[in-house]
Image 1: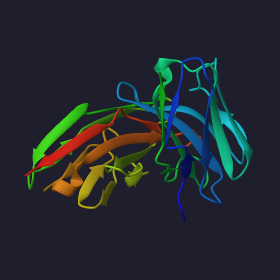
Image 2: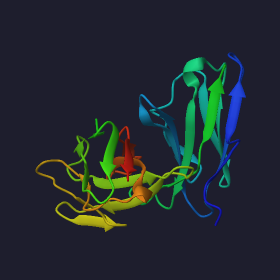
Image 3: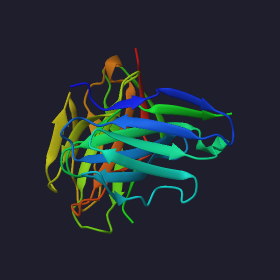
Length: 114
Length: 114
């Protein structure tokens, strides 16, 4: 079990460029979550899927951010027209049956917008 | 909405001394949320330390303990004698039984010094 795999581990983009972050959840897990980690805000929830269906995206900035889960083995978080304030560590996590059980996190993608 | 508040910033403790990291919660969507402590060791991903899903119960792991106190809406993390290997960032989290995502506090960095 390789755990939750996130790629790339580090990404540097220029202001205005697009960034796509990838996540491979643990096989068999039905729930996939995206969080953003900053020093000021801590761990902010962005969105989550259950059985590939979007369940709650209340934490997603309404513009420029989108997430998809085209199949059970991967999810993507896309940020269009990146801004310096998007710089953060983006964490993907998965769990077996929703959110009342242990959530397993990937090591994150550190996004730096210059 | 539901939220978690924990000791902010960094806590420095001398080796073999006791530790307490405060965590209080607000759960407006449900009276008895599930409560968690997660830990991120240097260079590693966020991982579950302990969880308690029943009010009044205590969870323990790796010498750490936390008691679910519904009267005080608290879930403080304690350890009687810390070691340098406990140096990490600790996050308190909650989830509602309605199947929503886990909400995290801002994290507390523990530094244990000789």
